[in-house]
Length: 158
Image (tube, rainbow, N blue to C red; front, top):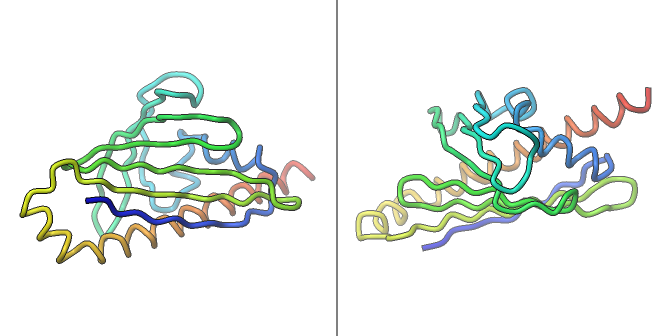
């Protein structure tokens, strides 16, 4: 079973500024309002194989997941993966120049690896709620990324 969504946001900042915000994992808790903590597991710069633990508040609860970079084509796109509870999560960010700004597309996919009857029942009962919560969190992340990138662009012009 696979569930997914795709959202776009125009950001009034050049792609390199958006990229720097997006890949500054250590500063995620100050950039993304849904992220309450980050533990970087791989020293050095953002790259293929870079890993971290991210703690996020969703549906009134905190959860920590280990995440890793599966693909990087700086500053055009990156793919981040996570696995939890028998489900693989893939998030792909694509940055496209748009006028003087950037269109940021976020594609999210959740794929159950071995969906037994209990998982299928849970998804039938709660799948829409989960995807609604994911859409809300992703929209907030896109808003937060845009705000941070636009603030950095403004600071660089002062």
